[in-house]
Image (tube, rainbow, N blue to C red):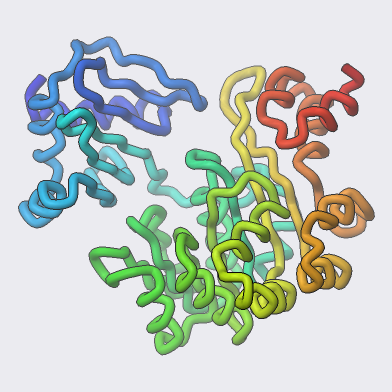
Amino acid sequence: MAAFDIKKLLQSVVAYGASDLHLVSRSEPQIRLDGVLKAVNLPKLTGDEIEEMCYALITEKQKQYFEEHDELDFALFLPNIGRFRANYYRALGDVGAAFRVIPIDVPSLDDLGAPQIYKKLVQREKGLILVTGPTGSGKSTTLAAMLNEINLNEHKHIVTVEDPVEFIHQNKKCVFSHRGVGEDTRSFATALKFAMRQDPDIILIGEMRDKETIEAALTAAETGHLVFGTLHTSSAPGTINRIIDVFTGDEQPQIRAMISSSLVAVIAQALLPKIDGGRVAASEILLTNHAISNLIREDKVHQIYSQMQLGQTDSGMQTQTQALLKYVQSGKISRETALQYANKADEVKKALMY
């Protein structure tokens, strides 16, 4: 397979409606369709063929970076084909690559069938909204749809900091400054430090991966900005613990106080295969109220889950179990799928009366 074929291959990935393409030596190219990997009907690739294909897509500077670091993250736009997030790496000495398809058209919250509460959340003037979940759970898509909602309705300056930049928003009512780590700024923490001088109303942080970034995000949320961020956590209360655990023991009381006053919501989502094909997002939604703020401040995060089970209809909060049960009852997902993805499988089993 020659180098020029990579563009055709990516074109067919988009045409299939797949989310990802994997190139690994001694294997056929693989695509991910509705969350499941499938081999493409092509010959197995050698490391040299993959290297030739992958190098055809990058600049000399990127090639040099990859040869030095053995890792390369970048966004790729191919006219008339699509936009991709790409990662090159080495496996057993050979080049490997993963391409994620990024839709060029930003979806709306209605397109995603998102809970109505999301439209209320994006109207907030300040605070921290976190969308969490494992890799490939649709976090970026949910956040893009939330920013799209703001773009349609409000005049704001939105600064996004991502590694690499994924969805590119057209300025409708808002003005977007898209910043890529590595291209436009040195790091998430540096970008956040200087973002305050760029007069933002809203800041999106692609990943809250270190102490400095988390601290800067909390400070921005406290000082009158609406901040969106992501973490790789699977439950809403678990997300709060993850943030607190990044800090040392003597720093934690202050961080708990900052979270309790600035956290607006945590949406922990997973993408589940539907019975009739396609996938659906099951979301655990935690909305901070007076009781939950107190629990965070008093180091009683373990009690948050039982608070989330109360007063659902009034608040718009829901546990993951409730989201899974709704989908089983409406025939969207199977009982087996619900149990497979459940954070609390025993609770789901009991509710389904297994």
